[in-house]
Image (cartoon, rainbow, N blue to C red; front, side, top):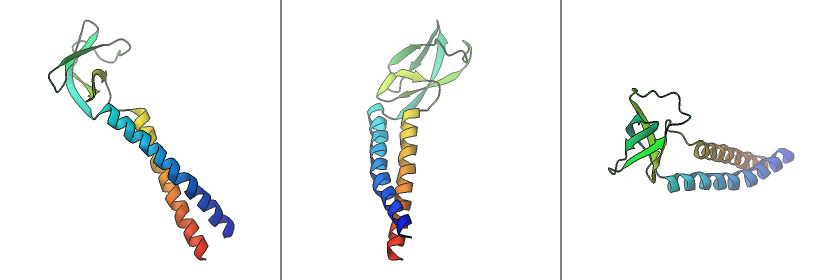
Length: 122
């Protein structure tokens, strides 16, 4: 049982600080980019055009987005701190990945800490 407790303690010592680092990265990405917002958009002359919540008009090239036709009604998503950059999906893979890795490492570190404590008591 001492070997299991030692391995679990190493897991706790590595997992919890690594979770803090990944969590900080995810939080920093979220804070620097701002919250998600959405706006109705149109496709005109090969460009997406939409109006942000603050009343400013924006456009972006529609090249590479073949899933949207000129007569479709659709919504674009943008970040509140960068309203000039639009996305067709509300997803930021780097933020989501950093958050999931932080959560996984944090849970592994907590589990390791629990196993290490129980192993030391036995």
